[in-house]
Length: 443
Image 1 (tube, one colour):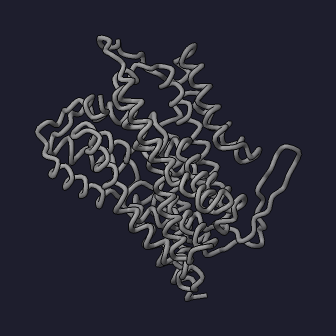
Image 2 (cartoon, one colour; image 1 turned 120 degrees about the vertical axis):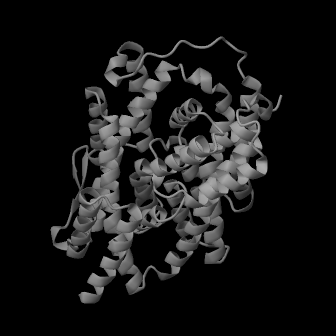
Image 3 (cartoon, helix red, strand yellow; image 1 turned 90 degrees about the horizontal axis):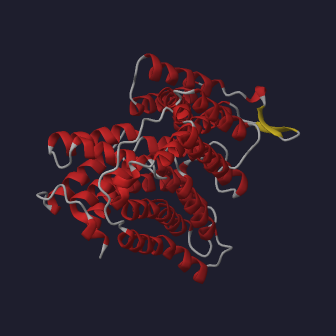
């Protein structure tokens, strides 16, 4: 039995060509982060066309929250799977990613050759200040929704302190929080505000064959470029490092792009030397202005990493290959999770301990994003940031004399526009970029 034969075909009357057209439109218009992207899909697919019911849409969204990776892209993949099996899921998921990936690639190419120009640097001064405000806004929004019990608030605080003061590995934070959530769900579900699970429906035959087939197929797709790199360029090449790093990241990316940016930046800057301090904020600013999932910022990192260590290729060719490889190993797992686990969605809906683990990870992600906020603030507002150690405590410490007053002014402006006047992300980015140019010209 192939994976497609287990698909519950809710949208049986939906023509494949019509589905492709609608998801292409969604992919081009999917600005605004996961909240806006999910709202757009709900409008187009539930309210306007009624291809999927409200309850099924929410059920699918909850399922995607259980998975690592961008939930909006995975929701699009799951809906495509519901409508037209694996080919429907593949097309829907790809159309959600491709428009933004193409734009990010073009912007990465421009950035690699023009970032040192004075006017480009001025634009990105404003962009980085706006990104700081946007991350603060995301932190407040997620904290308000996720931290509704003392245990969750404790997990968020513990995650922040573990990262900011003790430099604990990001995967350890995620796995530790998940383990605590599983234990709490088993013995004290109220500590996580878990609702009682609904009674399971009549038992059906577990879809093992479909799951194993999809996992084998997409595991092979995921690993294929790494095998090719190992056989041709070797494990000492930058492509191998890119593939391994972003494959690992794909497994622990709970909570969206914001949750892993500080970890990604730390590794890319300090461990691999792919980026200079502050460039991650530039990349996120580019990703905020384009459609598609914010995790496409990984493509920016992959392009620069390969562009700056191109042998035996030219910098342009190496950058293109690095960007493609990064996107491949970032999103191939997303398709694997959906196609392998979607047939289990009804069973997973009753897994209380799994829900507990997810709730705890979501709470810890708030602390992770708080660490990202602090990291961005230090590197956007100060030109020099050092490190001080006090036993096991490691503390990033700015040189106060290196404060960039222009970045501080633009950051305050962006915070006011976001919180006081409710401006959109794109509007804040545009005005901050213009402000960066104006301040550079005036000084």
